Image 1 (cartoon, helix red, strand yellow):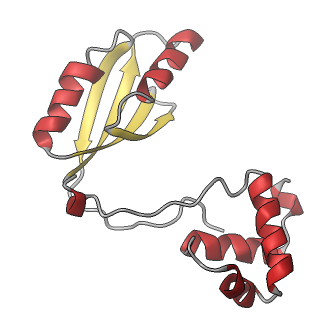
Image 2 (cartoon, rainbow, N blue to C red):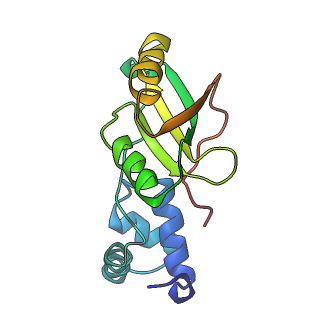
Length: 155
């Protein structure tokens, strides 16, 4: 299914689910203006097409003891396909890295990191990230406060 195949009801379904993934099918169907059975069929079709990839809870990191959010801009020594793939694969084993993007520009990767505290983050940067054979440079940015948090797609 491509975006061109989405109609106004599909868009409303996606908008509502992105706003509240725990909504019941009955409430969702009421909000988008169709009955429950076709609404459920549409949701299943969107899931099967990979447009809806999953449902997640937003957790309050500080209440769970994770007080530090940081971003790391990582430059590799060489940008060969094998090095890019190897580094991307390495990020999968680092729990502190919550999201990772391969990027263009001055860096090769942008890592979104969440840690218990500054010491844990520093240990990761020094002992894991900069110690990686492929890494040439690491620039870090510590966050001060999150000022906006929305679903990842404006729909």
